[in-house]
Image 1: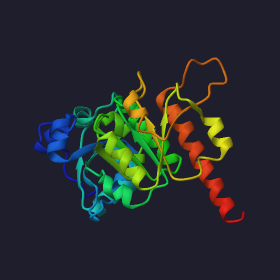
Image 2 (image 1 turned 180 degrees about the horizontal axis):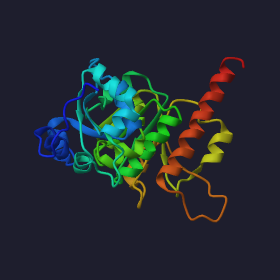
Image 3 (image 1 turned 120 degrees about the vertical axis):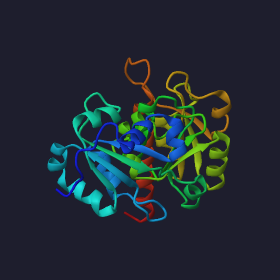
Length: 283
């Protein structure tokens, strides 16, 4: 296959990859781990703003190299170092109970917030005070699916490159610009200055999502601000928004979890914007 001999669990390359499980080392090296065929495939295809490949190294078992030969070949073509690894190495480096045989070391790929604003976004998800990495990754995936232009993680939110966040995004991390570490006040003000309406999603909001849709107020550029999984958005953050909107509960459920509410809100905006575009085009 043209790959090196089986790499040892004590290899410096393996130890360096294993250290990326810790945030301090990720920040120091500006590298993170992407696991599984979907994430690694997206990493192979991704390029940074400077045009350089995002994938730097690939660890693969013999079985995975045969099953996903196209991914391994693509990694080689980008110039990534490919390491043939026994299952024990993947188990050492992986953050999952059952590694899938492919593990990539990638460069950080977040975008400066100024670049997000410069692109004149029409739909943005702002994660303020979101601490659960699985929820953060899932909201990112929802934003990607809804056609959002960007995601912003405030400085009070979880690390974008936490292994659970990366896995939960299921490759969406590589699809759209993500700005990190932005103070929520700066994020809101910057988006407002760019002509974006700010909607805070909160179960106790004064405005109902259905009423917003019926009123035809959601067709313009919009940023949704989503809060903490347990206690929602602080009063100070809600006060920054143009409106605080609740997703109506028509049944007996007490509430929706963060990712589900985010999906409902983002898709509502996406549909309103598409409808507005069709009307503007005379269709």
